[in-house]
Length: 119
Image (cartoon, rainbow, N blue to C red):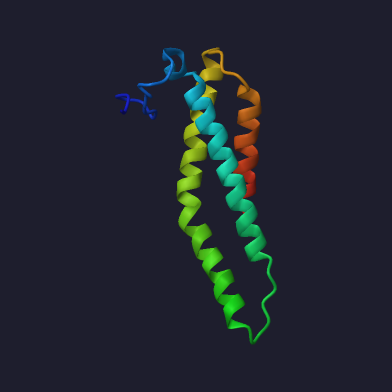
């Protein structure tokens, strides 16, 4: 659940090894890696859909491009919020010198994801 007075929330997996549920454990690391991968896939999908040429008489292609634009706009706030949430967690770990595997790489990935998302 939520941590009072904090922007972070905790979710534990009862069947997991106790160390995996640490704040800096593998559950959070996998969650961030999965999120970055999901956003990258969405960006690739969206940009390919937006790059399609639409001729004047082709309504079907126009509708497809407009649907892609609508989908992107519907996801912007969600992605931005998650990017900032995970970035905050990683910066907290960095500031407190908490050991977190691939911390610098994950920060770079999140920043690159954010830049890519700003289409």
